Image 1 (cartoon, rainbow, N blue to C red):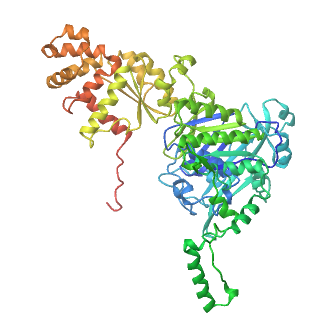
Image 2 (cartoon, rainbow, N blue to C red; image 1 turned 90 degrees about the vertical axis):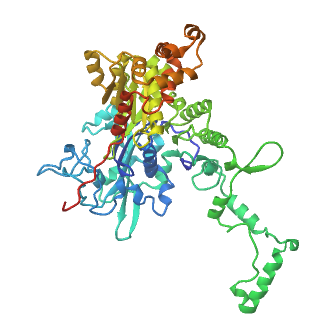
Image 3 (cartoon, rainbow, N blue to C red; image 1 turned 90 degrees about the horizontal axis):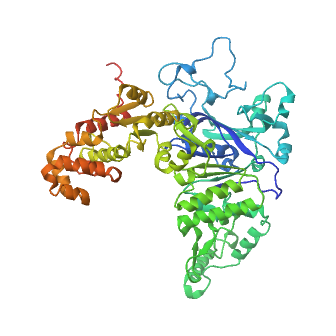
Amino acid sequence: MCAHVRYDNNKKLDAALKISRLKIRNFRGIRRADLLFPDHVVLIGDNNTGKSTVLDSIDLVLGPDRLNRRAPIDEHDFFQGRYLPGAAIYATTTAASAPPEEGTTEPSDNEGEPVAQAEREPPQGTGLEPADDPPQICVEVTITDLSSEQSAHFKDYVEWWNTEGGQLYTDASVQGVDADTVVEALRVTFIGQYVAEEDDFEGRTYFARSLKESDNPQPFSRRDKQYCGFLYLRGLRTGRRALSLEHGSLLDVILRLKEIRPRLWETTIGGLAEFDVASDPDLGISGVLESINAALNKYVPKEWGVKPHLRVSALTRDHLRNVITAFIATGEGSHSAPFYRQGTGTINMLVLAMLSQIAEDRQNVIFAMEEPETAIPPYAQKRIVHELRKLSAQSIFTSHSPYVLEEFELHETVVLARASDGELSQAPIALPNSVKHKRYRQEFRTRFCEGLLSRRVLVAEGAVEASAFPAVARRLAELAPAKYSSLEALGICTIDAGSQTRIPDLGGFYRSLGKTVYGLCDKQSAADQAKITANVDELFMHSEKGIEDLVLKNTTTAALDRFAGLVDWPQHLNDQYPNPKEDVEAALNDYFRWSKGSWGIADFLSQCTEEEIPEWLRDCCVRLRQLAQPVVEEPPSVGK
């Protein structure tokens, strides 16, 4: 875990600072991103979208301990791993990235600032275009709502931010900064690159304004970063270091806040230096050491080194930081164990308790946390989110938990999507007219959450289709894995629209968030079909009036008879069909319609062979696999 907080005094800062904008160029899987953040935000999207990379990029800029590493970046931190001069650093090009016309000046963004090499778009062309300069990683963070203390400290580099437009205020009119919508801002930029002369990587952080206005860019020092309290809690690594004394751990931060520092190391080192391990002759080790000492005296003078003995550690501060950790009693009795050997849920709650300690010292903190739901029950997830929001000036979360996501308002939920060329985009959640906010809240866990977290969404007409289609895809994947895939393996989630009339609105809703959307329904009128088709990427519509008819008319009698013998028939149908196999199609038709809410069709399809599953369903599964996993043709070899 990395913990970065301002800890030089206990004064209450008078403003709630926050990160308002984040710009990323050429960092890991992100070629380009320009994100705007509200006061509190949860970043969502499918796995490998770039959520963790976004938090890591902020850590590059604001994390005081990050730059203490020998090299804060390496080969794999560059987009596509391309860091050498002349390397092709962009996967694809588009017409929008055409080179500037003759006579134009250096490329610039919408605020008139020079664009760093990593930010420049490649010239239009085909394939990979070489870069003229060494590729750079560039990350720029815009911090707004500075306190009076921060404003005084950064006075030479303070700029102005228009909260309405979400951009820097660059108007020549000085009076404009007096508007309520214009606040003080500070921009900080990290630049990392490979240095051929050193055969190594370097990364430095600067005041962004000095990069533009000075021939001698001013570094944004570790001391400066401490004025921008940033606490980054990485998922899965949070607990291991929380109660250790390693640099940047939560316990280290708390000790600095409380100024418990002057005699900690000296007292500990002094005590350990006086403790001679295994000095008792009965243990047998001291005799061995004495024989070694006698042998040394035969060959070397005493100034070379004599009297070997055992000590607890290397007796240095850095070594002690790595080996000292908190122990916690477990169960009854006095036995205790290292805190990181406790249950993951217990560790995470310990972290929350320590965060509250930091907040009590009145720090103006930005909390960033990955997946607070890890090993935590739903009620505790909600409490963590609630507490961190209350304790911090700004909280930034990533999560896959509906219990976490429903704690955030629509404007606080940012959906991320990353294109194949590395362009990371954000989309707000704008509900369609047919979906009222109350319905969204009520049905969030059952109808909306899974779709928000997926890349691909299959919007099914009703509950029967929503349960049956994943089941049949899973069954076919088991029977013929070379031909079919389950929807889960294809990254497709299935959403129950509730009726065919709701498919267009839900399809348009998910498409507006950058999702690939498929529709699934019964036979529709031409007008309704056109409306659905316009709001999905591909429509799967069969020719029957209901999925029950599709299944019954296109399976085999053997499959129906077999399933009829497996069914636990309800009493009213048992009375009506004392021997279901005598009229198996009619009996199962009534059973399927009775069991709409209890997976009747899904259970039937799950026990079918490939030939017994209707051909239309099989064709749909093949087509979905083609869409989600297109076959990439190899380019022809040179000379052929």
